[in-house]
Image (cartoon, helix red, strand yellow):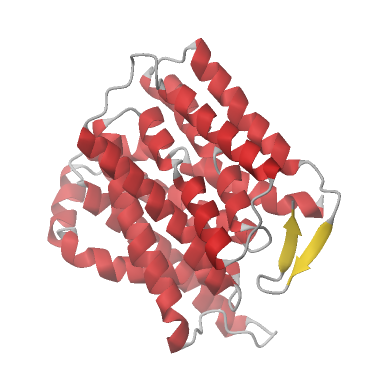
Length: 311
């Protein structure tokens, strides 16, 4: 069971991410811009995790200071916070505003391809036949649930660009976080990117409008808290914890369950249609997860990442 725990953490985090479209659409309908929604996620996540780490460090008896990081390592957190969290969220929210949840999700899930390529170059991760098959199944499944090739896909060129940008930004989280996880705990690696994301987004999100927006729409407050906790703090903690004990490429493919959840929620909440190809797409994504979870015949230890490398 312990060997499957990282996979379960990644799957749980991805499932929570899949619910973000509901919060984005509700809050957008209340007048919040994409940049303001990114700020909500960043502010709430940073505040919750930093306060938790401060209290934990103050009363911990093990002597470990999880809130303390080295100045020379901040590039990892700046990269994750600005180039991934801010850039990825902006592109993803912009795509959601122009496309269905399923289309935005399939464009987002070009991320595993980016992650595998970068992991091969940076971490010497092996590209096995099994990973390749899982990647193809996951992407094909995402394409099917989006309606690609069925005459149902309506996406502007800007929507395609922002969707691919969200995939690249999402991929960068796994890459920068993997470097940081070599020195710091998953909760530290989750907290600091949102601190830098909060700093980076503040000049761009019209913070002065928040009091008026919340005053005009009091019901937005629980949705904002949900966006920050359920769609950000908790899933990022789960994903980063799983990432610390598995390969970035494999983690990214496992997270392909997110568009399945997004699609199912789109059907249940917004009445978006699900066709037979869509059902086949859901099956393909789950087949990719099964392939990745099969036990390997051989394992070798990787000194560079401190984890087991599996074919």
